[in-house]
Length: 286
Image (cartoon, rainbow, N blue to C red; front, side):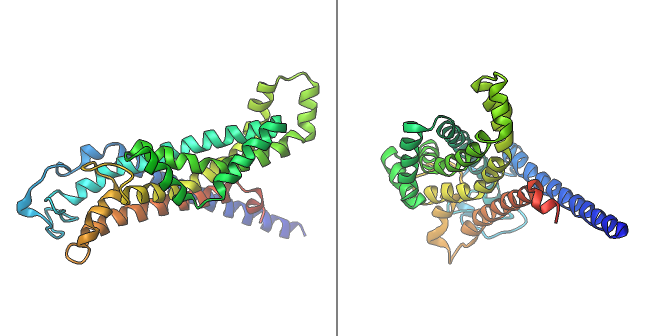
């Protein structure tokens, strides 16, 4: 019996170490992506905005690994520079909807009453519409530009986090330790910062990481439809839009930014899945 228990503990430890190594691996990949986006200008082999019609639509070769576009601009350089806009715009968007949604959810759960009813009905209204369709309508009203695209997606992205934070906060609000903290004379800000936020931060963080891939796809979708960044600014969605008419004659113009989106979204999704498993007590004890 003791030996079986020792074997079970050993297996749990091995599984835990494996999960930790997997998490570190994806964190390193994510940091490499962010560093590449941060120093994209420094690692570009060519000026991403320099036009040379003599080499327009040149296929991939040793001089231009991803080929060139219709204006003779190096696709590798544009993909690298486009990562700055695509990745950091997405991270900013996810940060906005996470903070805004979590704040609204905590306020609704803590205050209750008319505030909870009104804000939750507003979130139901946003959730009733398909997200990207609603974002298209908002972006169309605001006009083009990456900032307006971020605002449009933020408008439809916060209800998910508000619902999550509200449910988690209600659970913590009615916990016995919270009752004891209230009786000890702790103020509301202290209760929220010391007890509520630390206990709901894990699920909210996992959800925000998992949402990065979705937001990146939707931001690229708005740019593809002409409601995101404006030319000649490099961004993966707009680059796919520029090359879609030449998909048969110059497929690298679409495949290069498309592959960049695919790899980036996959890395962030795998990071989110691994982080969720690592922070889940049920997974640890299996």
